[in-house]
Length: 129
Image (cartoon, rainbow, N blue to C red; front, side, top):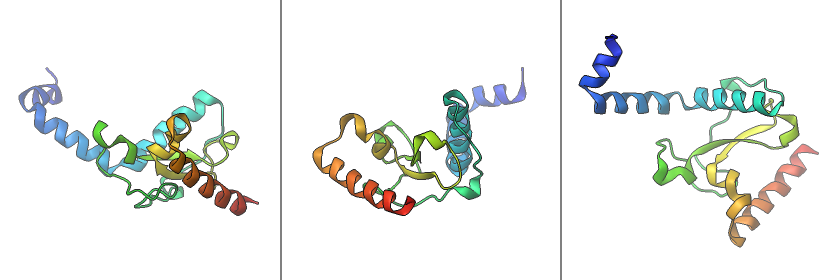
C-alpha cells in the first residue's frame, strides 16, 4: 500500500485538517489554477500570475470581510476571482478578488445589494475609460 494512503487511513481527521490548511495557505495559487481551467473551457485569454492578484481583506463591492477559511457555512464571504469585462478573459488589469456573493449576486440579489453593485460598477467603469 502506498505510504500516503496508509497514513491517511490511519489518521483521516489529521490529514483532512492538514489538506485544508495547505489549501488556505495557497489560496491564490488554487484560484489561478481554477481560473486557467475556466479560461480554457470558455475560450478566453489567460496571462495571470500570483503577483497580479490583489487579495483585499474586504469585498470591494459589498464591503463584507472576505473569509480565509472556506466552507459551505461561509461560502458567500469566500474570495472569488472576477473578470471586470468578461470578454477580455483572465488578463492583467481585468481581474480582481471580490466575494463569492458579489459574483453570484446577479442571480438572486436583494434591492440593497443591487444598489451597492451598481455604485461599484459605475466606479469601475470610470476607472476603465
